[in-house]
Image (cartoon, rainbow, N blue to C red; front, side):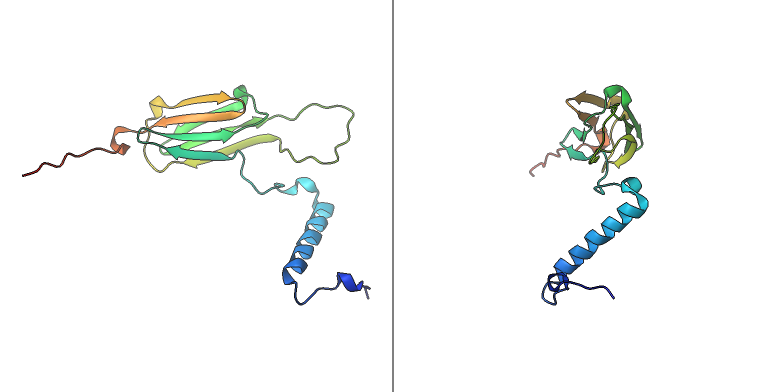
Length: 151
């Protein structure tokens, strides 16, 4: 039978603290058994993006720190942008990592847009680790002003 200190006992009045303690213990067990790299550390999708639009175009801004422009692949299929590439590992010799949170390797993400765009006019620029993709809306997707005639 395991002995618990009084302070380690679950409190009836603090169920959330007990759940958090249990979650931390499960994380520790999975790290021990399966290793740290068994699943994404943060659970986030890479690369993170912001998608905006104005009356003329859609804009996708993707954060790609540590990725070179030559390592980015970009294509369009119907209403979807396919963003892929590779963030290559740094070649550091004779070091011991105490924590390694930066994910390395290949990535691929399909981003579906809410409307039609002109695939022949898509532009992409990469500056300071930010990829900006401009997707001009097709004529049928652009809003039209209709003049109301008084009678």
